[in-house]
Structures are given as structure tokens and as C-alpha cells.
Length: 162
Image (cartoon, rainbow, N blue to C red):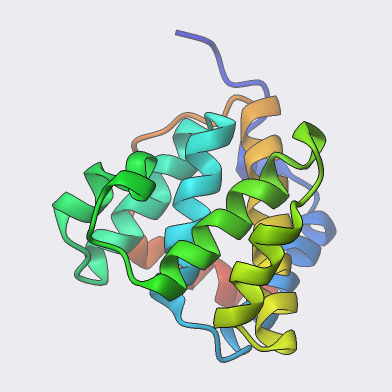
């Protein structure tokens, strides 16, 4: 097992506050929290961020998400358990996360626009940008997966806002 490079509790407080500021904005944006966690989990799967996969799967379970939908998320196109809105969000998430593989295709944009308003699509994109940033931080610093508990996030976010 790889050793952690940096204890996430020792990140400069201003840096953590900046990252959590975006999360605070998203929490108040009116976007469905379960949808945001779903796209966070999918982006984390793509990026191979064990810490974030652990976190967002636990968050989704705490919200009442079914195991079936969690297990099949990586194959969402072949599974009948996701709504059209979720499918549009997942396709958008994959395209934005894999932007170096051919940018964001027009058909994926049109699919997303059919399900989301301009503001919602902007907020969805910001959520994807945020999770990709968190993934890169946790992967770079080798944050160890497994210890996350859903209630702890709310306490951390509250303390960072002060």
C-alpha cells in the first residue's frame, strides 16, 4: 500500500476554505444533492480516486441510494435504473472529466441542455470541476480511503465557513 504524502488536516486553512467555498455555493444552488453526489461518484470512478469513491458512495447510501444503482453506476448506459436527467448529468460528467479525449461533444451538450436550465448546467459543471479538483488533491497526496463518515463532512464544512 502506498503511504500518504500529506495529512489532509495539515492543508493550509485558506486553501481548504477556498475549496469548501465552492462546495458551500453548490449546496445552496438548488441542485439536487443526490444528483450531485451521483456525478461526484462517477467522476471519482473515472479518475480512480479511492478516497472520493469511498466518500460519495457512503454519502449516497446515507441518502437512501440503492446498492443496485451504486454497483451499476460504472455501467449506467446499460442499466435501466437511471432517469433521463441522471443520464444527461452522467454523460456531461464523463465528457467534462475526460475533456482531453475530444472535448465535450455537441450531442452530449444537447442532451444536457434538454434536461437542465442554463443556471443548472453551469452549476452542474462547477460540481464536476470541484470533484475533479478534489480527486486530484486526494490522489496527489495519497489520502487513505476508508475512514470517511458522512456526518464528518458537514462538521468540516461548517468549521471552514467560520
